[in-house]
Amino acid sequence: MGQEQDIKKCGKWKQVTEKERYQIEGFRRFGMSVSGIARQLKRDRRTIQRELKRGSVVQNVEWELKELYCADAGQRVHRVCGANKGRGLKIGHCHKLAEYLEQKIVREKYSPDAAIGRLKAEGRDLGVTICTKTVYNYIDSGIFAGISNKDLPVKKKGKKRNCQPRVVALNNLKGRSIEERPEVANQREESGHWEMDCVESGRGSKATLLVLTERTGRGELIFKMKAQTQECVEDVLNRLERKHKGKFSMLFKSITVDNGPEFLCCRRLEASSLRQQTKRTTIYYAHPYSAWERGSNENANKLIRRFIPKGADIAKYSERDIKRIERWMNSYPRRLLGYRTPAEVSATVGDCFR
Image: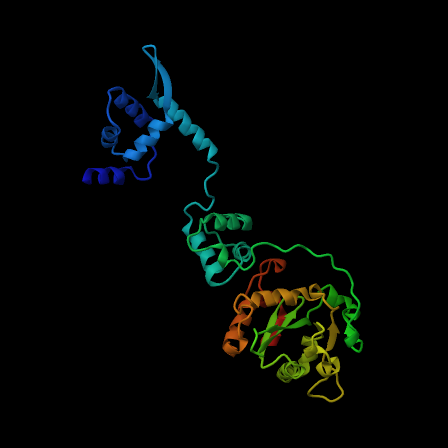
């Protein structure tokens, strides 16, 4: 028993060499058993059995067909298998890259694309360069011990929709349609134009998040509200106006919202809380059932759901939790920003946090 353990220990992870194949052929000619050959070569018995099967040929011996082991045949099969197995793993034994990806994807909730893109944007060299598709392939194949598909926020990209104009909602005829929004806002050529939406709790809770997304730099502002009402939304905007005072109108030139009841009265949302009969911003309404018109806002909501899943009670999350999510989103690299973060590219976001 002890001898077999020594054989297994010595032979572990080593392929049979060409020299050993000729030795096996000679041993078999002298009638040596599989166990005897394994002891002579310090190999596991199963390794010898597999090699005998691999190099087995039928030969005519004294007018009788016999199945014998041929070292040349075994070596040929070995070479063919080696040629067919394809390239080795590109990541190889680069533990630094594997640890980096595990840190970003599992602990920091990055997508594989964000993790790889940020690595390239920072110019860091961890020994191996791989693309996003390769990372997904490795995860599917179980190459990473600490990363699986359940750690991925989105497995594949959704189908691109054909965006067609819609009619404006009847209950918002008094508000401005998104069709009236200035072209600099539509083309994201000027900062200070925002999209606004709410992230709801599950059943049984009224707590809501008000999410504002800056269209140019994708900066995020998140506020916890007691309920999804017009009064709560007004209160958040009033607090922002008191904080920034005269700068508010420059920081928030326009805000695009959906047709939810919490945004229905544009006059109250636009009116300044500091100066009577003064407008602090301009509200634009997207077309009904056209979430793609606030695409940046919708994507931001998906990022929030990595931390607060659908059905969760937002009331159980503290203000500190919400601000931690906000900081994470403003520090998350985006492909459309060249894998820079909103905090790095958006002066508007910087002003909003001061």
